[in-house]
Image 1: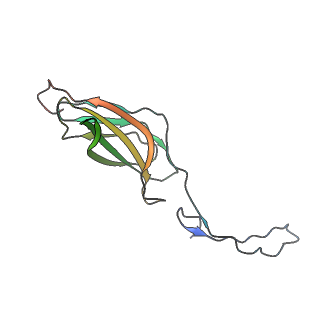
Image 2 (image 1 turned 135 degrees about the vertical axis):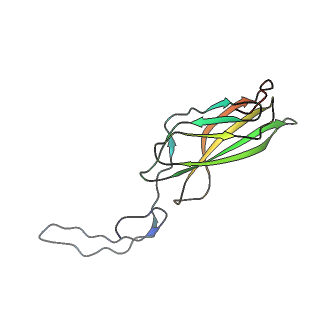
Image 3 (image 1 turned 90 degrees about the horizontal axis):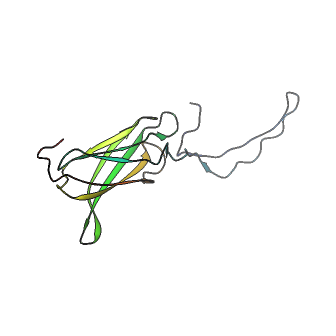
Length: 149
């Protein structure tokens, strides 16, 4: 198999030359780990569409990522309780390269102000830690609507 796999460690040796002469191989390098660049949003825009008393859709722009990489997103939803933010729920979704993304949140409380933040990681590559995106939006669910949207 050819190519370099992200997340794998490699040691390298090299030589230089022309068609007439070639140097000896160099010694082995220290171990190097191949990495992909972090995925980045095409724009810093995130929106919240309130769908009713108990649900909302959070949408954000496409992310630029390496070809073939599937991105996993986590949306953390918090509300203010007693002057401090407390996590209410978390939603997950994944998309292929270049796809726009959104997630519908259910189980929200009517007439409540929420804050949603978006985190990202690459499925199957690199660290399993969630990366901060800087994408955040606030919204308030409806009092008046009687049904879920």
